[in-house]
Length: 350
Image 1 (cartoon, rainbow, N blue to C red):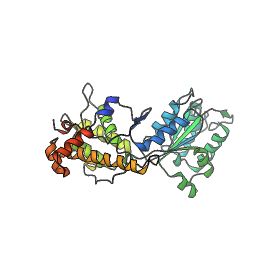
Image 2: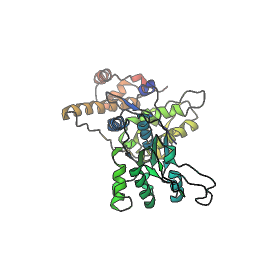
Image 3: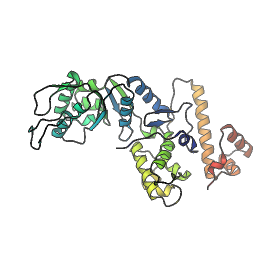
Image 4: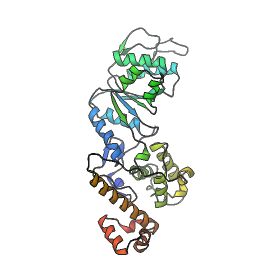
């Protein structure tokens, strides 16, 4: 199980290669972000946490759907635990027993009574991960439990009432499955009371340096400081499309932290598919709450600052060489360094 933990404030601030953050940094539980695309997620977490409403979290694998569920659970006043079950990891007979429990002798190998996840989550939250993979017969039973708040164990006849809040997650398009008659429409609407969509990491490029720095600290050798990430390695991380999202980034930094022989993580320490990844198109967040001229000015400033920082990295912090790369005078570059509060010394090799 992967956790995307919050780093210290100093860790958020120190990376020179991070994209320019919005005025307000956001964090919630174990999730960190400075990307505008995550603001609606945090707002929905705050809105639905202190309620019993069923929530459906959609998003690609590795985007942190379980951490969103935990943030919602920790924000509520329920006294029970959050119990998680991966619905795609178990065949139908085992999934039924896992969710609802079984009585002794209900099937071969049932040597005693066993409580299911619904009972264990009584008073708390049940997190159904990969709910789109639940077999049709189980969908019927799950719908009945959500409606009646009661069920029977496998092989049992006595109804068991539970007070459980259900949060479901999926990396599949449930509306498409409904159209293909592979997911019950009534169950979909029962689960989709509140829907939270997790953006993929490729739509949150501002967060890549924050997360990379954090994972480098997380996987530092015991008793040793974390290895800083060199500009060339960070460039590779920012170019990659991250089909595996945050989980893929965590794995890449863990590997690099273990295999790096020098004092820093370089591009040579990263997986080859990341280093040689093709450049991806730049995604510009659009904030319709701001006037277009203001958004354009802010976008131009962001692009200009990032261009100058990239030129400084290539020039190894030399202002004159940076000016030649940018096609500007040395005086213009010096003025912009002061305007954007860019420290050229950060880009000099150690």
